[in-house]
Image (cartoon, rainbow, N blue to C red; front, top):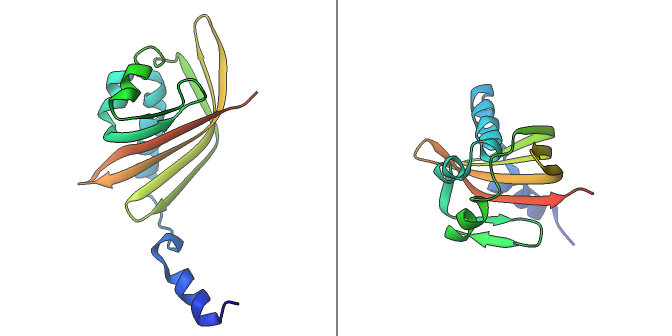
Length: 137
């Protein structure tokens, strides 16, 4: 059974101290996320950490590092992307973006998914360290 002092210690943990992002930072992160979808693999690579992890619907599944770019070479460049139910949470130098996406490109059915991307602020630059997609049917 937890005592009140144990609960206080738990709530004092850094993960419980949510920060906020300025409107400018929020806008920059959402712009990066949209460009991740629409601007091609080279742009996505420039805003993603070297050893990032991404989880896509099977196949390809879980990818890390250079595996990501082999997969994304053929699968980026969506013509239009709509992000709904946007949420953003910050804890120190980490920001998590969650959203529902509807993406479209020529000759491909509209792709709908629930997504989450995690960014790390390193030397004043935000880099994606993980991305996950769950298809919505």
